[in-house]
Length: 398
Image (cartoon, rainbow, N blue to C red):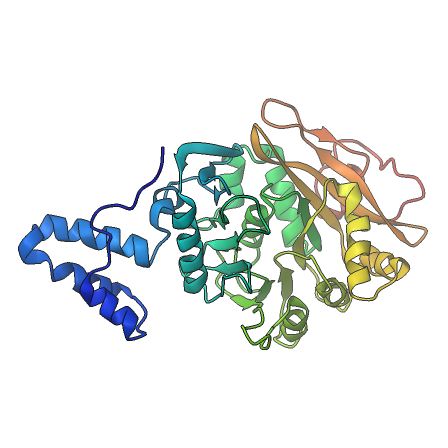
């Protein structure tokens, strides 16, 4: 099935005149254009025309129904025009597709709404729409077929840790553990793959922080939806079409250190900003946190070493700082059963190097969570009942 432009969505002469005059569309203009047709269409048709016109010039056009659907986290248009959505169970084809020229027009318009440029000279774009969704688009010949559009949809409302437990993202027994990690101001990293739920879990954990604390949140593109009264956001900015004006995460982390933070949060650690984050966590800013791409908790150290290389740090320097900076690694994963917290691991020092040891592990709904060898030591630090007696780690100190 091909998605065709909806009737009533064509630009009227009045709207085209605004385009010729260089005046961008806004909701007031859309309402004005639709109202001009009241005599011919009637009140009901005017409302329908206004909605269709707003979708075409202000929203995501044919993708709007899926962006508004509850539970959808990602919407994608591939080079063949097929529209795919992720409702938490992986990407599913919705049975419809866009024509190549319609997909290109949509991608270019969305890029413009995000304040970015998308053309042959700048064939990809990464930005945020006013609604808060994250846009990525890429044009041929860098991709096969027609344009590729990927839209990440953040939660409309903050999601609490209790809600994630109800949704079976974590076992009920783990909720007090994660709350204790936050309240005891242990520095943590949420690891996992793309779309596994790292941002969702981190936002829920931040919502557990004492309201009197001041949170400095640094992000490349705003994705964290957090329920906290004292939240300060810093967002990176790419260079403009002249190649100037870039503000990197590294710059923002440095600025955050001067803004009297109680906790520093980096939405996603993926570059040279790892140097400033590790320095911040080693200079008295307890309870800091962030997310990082990793296939397993044991891979986090290697991931930090790779990121540290981008900042000019040696592997030895990264390991030394990481061992003193991070206390807990919470790993999330996604399979056909959905997103879940797969493990909680503790980071210890062994001969001065960081050593990540599982404390809690879970294979998903219907399976009993398991204790790992690091659980007694972590439970003691969190002042929780270990239920396993003495720690079993030899040669490891917390």
